[in-house]
Image 1: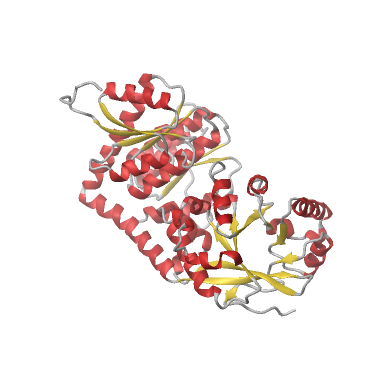
Image 2: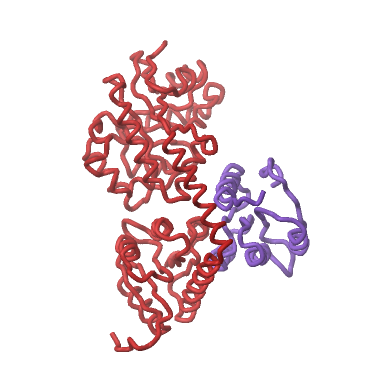
Length: 109
Length: 387
């Protein structure tokens, strides 16, 4: 993923808990989360948290799961801007990110 | 109709489904929950109803599979009209692919049929509530400024890009006849932030302005067509979404005057509606255009178009051409496709030809119409052949 996102300032987190902590200390334009991480929180929970706390943040889910229920949840909970199956297509992910970032870009800096 | 007009309504819901039984069920459920329901028998009626409404709708509930305009296209059309009017999609045939498309289209819900009274009621209430929250949020001054600023800025850049757009032309060479068979018109812009054509097109998609971009392309090609050598065809790319744009078929389409010389390139990359596509293509043929299927060999997609659109011309994607001379398997695939196309009555163009060895290998496979840097790069105006 770091390679896919080269050119961006990327911060990594190993768990939803860590991601939540990292987001408290720094402003992020986008979050890319895996679906399966730990037993208590999955990627959709994390993105839901991000949606509530930072509504402007672009939210991507990446998952190896072909489970229809996960995809249905992703739509119906409204927390996901784009859904990528592993292995993801670098070009597609980047261009989706570029476009969504640009359309949400605001004059913060 | 029951005379309960006194009751306060929760809000208004547009329901689009081509199945009258489903429409009735949705109306019964939602009316009993207190919604004012408007029914539409297809996507077109729904869009017109939403645009003409004197009181705005709070959400839209739509079937995915409908003739002409499907649920995904309905979401796109709603987005052009209203930035955050929520659309819920329902389907009898839920799939992973459908769910992913629902997310990409911006639908807020993907409901599988049959549904329970409860689940439909909850989903609609939640969508409408979120819509209300979004509206309220937007009314908060700073937020509104931010949001509109964003979109305004993107729209302004897009408008500049269209205004500063121009067409480059790249020859397609008939190697056997030593002549230029056609020129492909390629969109370019001098607006720095949108110089990459794929980004420009994605921006048009995002802003719901694909038809506008298509219109600019047609105007520019028509303006240049007079200078093109009279025996050369003109290849013009058409976005999947343009196929449902009435202006493409309108009498005042500037390209219409040159229709007999124009080959419209259609790619499944930008999504051809499998139900409406062939009918639209038949209409274009009636207007005098010829049809090319673009990007054959990029992914699986175009094989479907080959069967359903019966194109006059097939363009092989450059991924099939690259290093053809060094890869015997690729050569066999290309030769087999070329044979198939000939049998179907289509001529074959190879794109992205860069080396002499590729040219020789293509000729060996019976492909004579070649395009690529080996012959010429895209340039302003129509460069003659330098062999």
